[in-house]
Image (cartoon, rainbow, N blue to C red; front, side):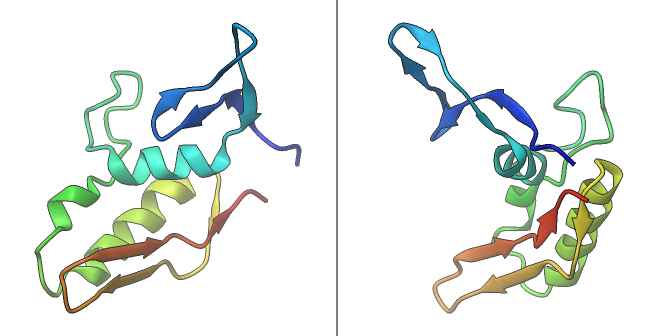
Length: 102
């Protein structure tokens, strides 16, 4: 399958080069947007979104977060292999969705 392309973002800001918007691969950004967004953020797809920020400082929710990531990304056509959710001693949540396009 061909790579998905979209308007390129850098730190959630549009990238402009020589006065024009740049185009770049968008799968990584799409996965991040889906994980960060809460359900209802996009009118076209009201059920899309994990809302990872709701899981911050919630001990023992790694399995629920992993399931939400897998369900959302699978419904978007990604192959998801056991998302990795790790909360360190300082409470920092690290998410590796292990998602790829078929």
